[in-house]
Length: 124
Length: 235
Image 1: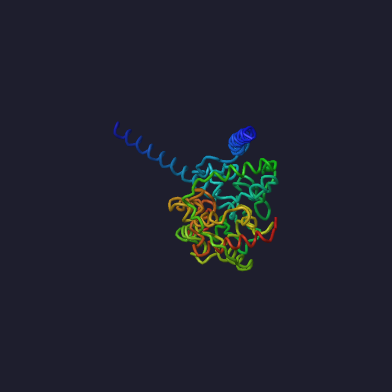
Image 2 (image 1 turned 90 degrees about the vertical axis):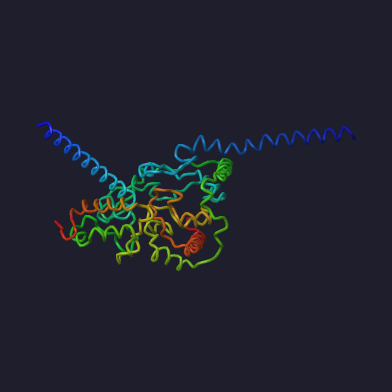
């Protein structure tokens, strides 16, 4: 009985720690998004950022599940790290690999999936 | 005759002593103004923001490397009649609100920069020129003057590199989150521009301008372009 109690406690602690680290990771990704992405992709993530007035190509609407579900997580990672041109998109999306770490970008990709409420191949 | 010589010598000694007192007081004055009136919003000692949160809270440009960054003549003029250089402030995220077509600036949240007298401006500029942190990032004399046409410069700035997304190349044309570029040629030292474009992160670790983006071969061409833009006197 005592052994069962110990195992239950240990599992609870692990689950709590995971939940805490996930929420921290989410908050970190949100901070990154607000700092580096809002300027073009907008406060709502809908591609209507402050800077778009004179842009020849409009930024991706990250809330567009249909469009975002056509991109794999690797596509999104690459577009952020190496810029739009690396995935045959606009030069207006610069490469952020010199600024953000791979871990930051991985968190950003997860955050984009929250914004679009979608996964690759699944728009709803 | 001897008396005249003695009087002349004594006068000279007094004059030199007077100068020795006045010169340090003059130099210290700009520093005193910086400490008293500028340090609330400007970082005079470094380091630059080390976290995103610190970056978002920054109120004015870091000045601890001002002597490597700004042109003294520009500082003297600008301080007497300051005009906003970053249309959306230091961190745009604090000054925008969602709009119908796009996020819009909330200018009511932007504070004007104080103006100072000509004398104070000269003294502040003099003091700022002694702020030489990060000199190791400057390759003195790296920039060699040259020319580029406005059309070629714009092609590079907009179509090839996409810089127009965040920077204006004339009032009302271009992005708003970064500093205006049509005054950069008058405002910034050339070797600094080369160094900053090469690696913004080295100067300002969390800045929202991508690092490692401008090719080495293009650095000088961009500076030529900023000079050409400045000569248009858009301001």
